[in-house]
Image (tube, rainbow, N blue to C red):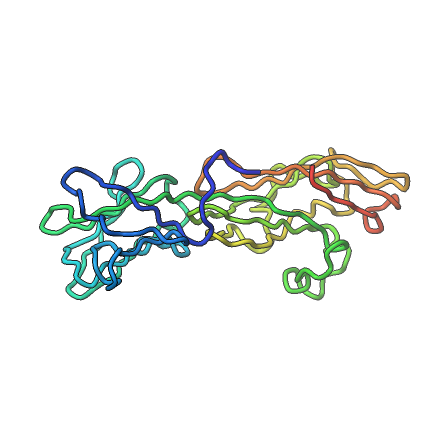
Length: 279
């Protein structure tokens, strides 16, 4: 399920502002935005200009300065207008970075290059995660997933059959952290408030821009013990719908997606045929 947000390029998050004020007119002129979203000068040197590139890599915002840039420091301004941080620029230094982590405020950030307390150049970029639930599946239907690596070779297939993986992608421009995984609705063990995060062997998992990873459950949602509101397996068939929900750290809106499910072929979950399809 998508948040109500714009979609950005997966790998590059640079977005160039026109001018921050009349006093900055011409500071970023003579540059070209390339197909991958980065900004480069319009001359043959590739070394001109003050702010050559600004981009998010992992959980850091990196700033690359031109070789002739003469600035004292670089400031990063948050969407609310407050200072996020500042980095002093020593002579000869062409790169500085800011650790933004996964607990930042999403929105438009401004990068200002400062010399003698005056803004010499500036640009802006949108830093906003966009998580999407791509797929959900079980061991019995996806044996090629690294189940033994995740849960250990000593665990029985019954244990693995009770857990599930959820594939999540970050198509946004900033990192995000999943801090809780829940399965609610027509599963044998719907868990609205799992013990811990509901993610196997982790309290939180960071999803970087452009990444697509599998998260494995730790709440036994498809286990043999049917919860009070759970749905079991019938030989003649039993069908319903469940929801996968992520609680995340950076944004206030949870990420969720609905799936159809059909249980058939047995009256016990261990031997049940389970088919999960998109709604």
